[in-house]
Image (cartoon, rainbow, N blue to C red; front, side, top):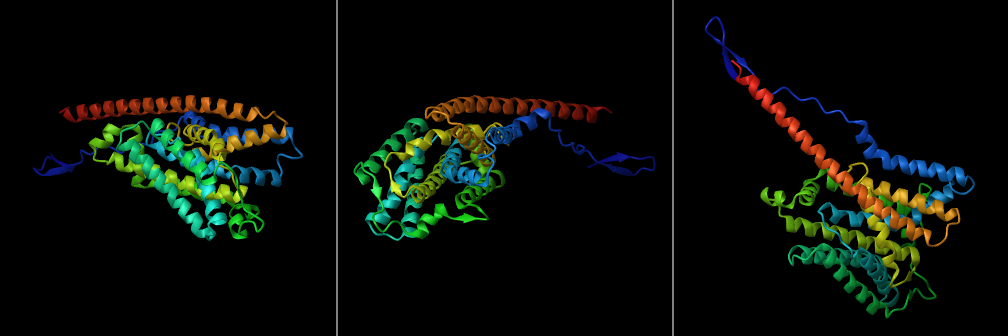
Length: 366
């Protein structure tokens, strides 16, 4: 506030605060970039429904897709968290294999109760994530190399635990309450789908609504700036790896309840789809940044595409071809979205500087 003289010798208060700026309009390109992947998922579902009207758009098929893709969706969400900070965790596939083997080993061979075995494995996944974060952040080893090394160690531990053979539940089978973690339904849909939905909500709250998420995004976009504003980048990066390991541990428990047989090499099959979902998800909903909702949409596209081409009678090699081609497209689109976001931010800053300069000039005019 400042005083302005009037004719009667008094002063009248005037405001020097800038006028409120109107909210910028969203361009059509923004909506296409944000929701184009979701529209593509709907389009794929319609195309396969028209091509396979008797089998694809049925409740049984939808339930099968939701059930079969629950573990890949959980693993994609787990892979997404370190990517937020600009790191990659290549050990998640090996960690998934070790987690599902350990659950069955503790229940079948050691006679543990299934809740205790599940809790220990999930906590163990978080511990592995912390070790990954410590190696990356404090030993200063590139995340690709560090997590590939720890993943090889986890694979070796898996082979040592199983002796290179499968773990079979035996004549009495596994506890029904444990297998119900995967086999049960709720509201007519598989329960694993609700696990995925609950995790998406939790990650959305953590990343989009809490300071933790803002810190992780700042670290991922500009670690130097994060250091300058006082964010402990190493500690929060370790948090990201720990959360990823926790999710991988839970995914391993669910995989054990699904397969009911411990296969020491099964986790590697989930590594590529997980990164496809995480990277492709960074081009949707919030283009240019990894996010939980976008990852869910990306996993939906993969699930619909794989189910559709499978029912059309595609050869076995089509699945890895689909995953590999989608990964290349995901990396390309993710890079383009990130560059577009940076250009948009720079343009907004330039416009803001021009507006501020014009306002200052207007105030300096007598």
